[in-house]
Image (tube, rainbow, N blue to C red; front, top):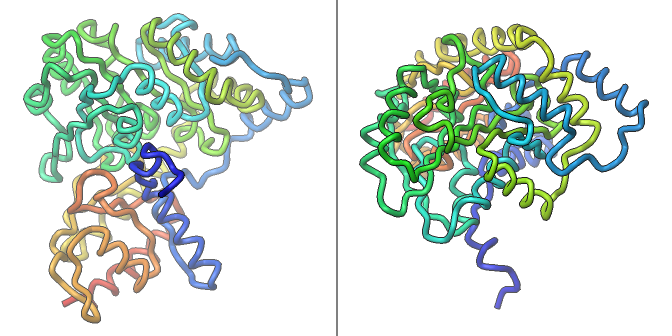
Length: 397
């Protein structure tokens, strides 16, 4: 008889974290692994943000902040939403958390009751499903494919709505596909959801600043859904601040208060020093993010050019974030050394064992025919990884 709860036993481990751990284990054995499994910018945090953190230490920001975050940071985030997105929130509607992941967990645990259905278009970020399950909710997965650039339609979402539907959650720019929903896409979605006033929307916009196709658009801008949309964002991706662990959300006041209450019993506030660093980032001209975005776009173009030359890699054209999500089902049924590849997990196992390249299987994102390729690393690493993959797949027959 196990001592562990059914809650933890029913929870899957994050496959991105698992693959990264496997890469570290192989590296510890002296094996040269190119790790493309984690979604983390390889750029350093900008100096002006680090300077703000150093000043915070010198100015003795060493005490507990308010659970929801320092008021001046919440005010700055509200101004950021107005400045960058045309969204209007009061500081009381903003909650600062230990990363966007905690923001999402706060929302789900505050809104979802056992048996409530949450519509999640696939591919989805690996954590969405597990947080829904943790709350006792029922994930309702809507499939998309590479030939439609992994974009779902309002008709697909409406077909999935039932009397038990409580929420739709999605990301744009999307992790893992790089798909970006433009204004017309979101306007059509909002118009459909306007007919379903009991459905909340969780819009994960953490990759806002890594967008290759124009201005970032948020579904929260539309009056039909503004008062039941929760916007998730943060500084991790756009400002290369993953380790600082600062995310933020904007929500209807009742939901923001509930998340404040939830966070108060889990972690309390985020790090005081990290909050002061985030303040500098949020107040900065968004133009400071352009050089990193341009570097990512250059890498994306390189990866797309090289991957398209490998037979069996069927890719969409990513419009944001820093991932390519090819369909590799061409290789299912092929084998090497007597081992047949049946799934994307089999394929990623084959690659890490024989090419020493670490990728994440698409099954982790709800799309078992695909795999996630992160190009948040140097061009040198990317070229080496693709060369290894190209040579490895020639071993399959």
